[in-house]
Image (cartoon, rainbow, N blue to C red):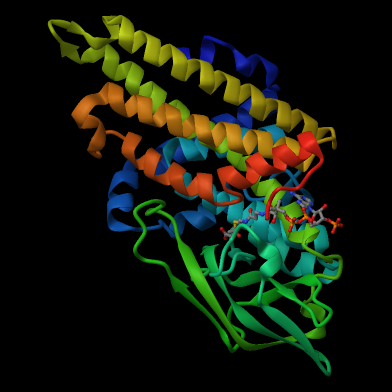
Length: 387
Ligand code: TGC
């Protein structure tokens, strides 16, 4: 615990069990992900061997019940997401894609057979999942999806394309969203070794380099009738999964913000300019204080969302408040921290530029700033202004 953790004592509002999950996640992230993260980011390498280890530690889908999942609180999960993202947004994204999106979809909308087949192995990290909603023509409006599912006798036949799909080249199973012949969006459980399923990694990223995002081509992918997620119907189904991932982001990005702030505080105490540590200059202290305020406010927002979620009262409008505010403030904190580090702040001697680059992805996926602003605007006015 540093002063950043203790000064405002948000931790006092967290139970002992939740703190224990946080401690376990911090140890995992600091000892297994952090030591190589700068080189992994440089080399565009996702440490695939860690995907299974995250499962063994019990973090995937940990806030869901049964099928090998821990049934912990949503706050506990949020704290875990925060500790992962304090090291790198990439591995928090793995946690979200596997747990909140792929497992979340099967858990919410799957048949008992689908749940039994996939969830225990996915929870243990023995099977990897991905979630295919977004398409190349634009992620903000999934209603324009062109991927189709046609019924031919006892089979479904899926055709289409997906883009920005985390983990797809490594996945054993993909949850694919497609329009049926009535134009209704349905979810399908697609083993990735099904003929016609091809995933290709997107290589030219300057952000999320220690993570994996892919395109998926679906050409006459033939599936048994049982592949459909029977309880999924309409766009609200994938949106319910996005809610889970967006919730995790509201917590996670506060981890990246904390890491930037810690580095900036430490640097302000050791770096001397004009004969004194820069931390003794009023302008630096004012910058640090502003970052600290937004970090603590972001934590409180995340904690409020978590308590609402655990009480079964969280709305998607409230999640938009957390996603928009916390990502925006994390980006601002990273930017101010970079300015405190001066020129050294652009090097990978410090994690700040990496966090900044990653957070640009986080502000874009799971609903852009603009989309979440418009969701909040609709809540306030009752008028949808998306088009
Ligand atoms: P709209 O008319 O608002 O809604 C259609 C139906 O969905 C319901 N709904 C939600 N339900 C639960 N949670 C939410 N967050 C929901 N938002 C909407 C809504 O009640 C309605 O239900 P019903 O029963 O009345 O039909 O739909 P719209 O088309 O006007 O949507 C508006 C908008 C802009 C909010 C929505 O399109 C949106 O959220 N867009 C952003 C999508 C997004 O976040 N895409 C990025 C996903 S990231 C990604 O795919 C990569 S993850 C994969 C990976 O990384 O591996």
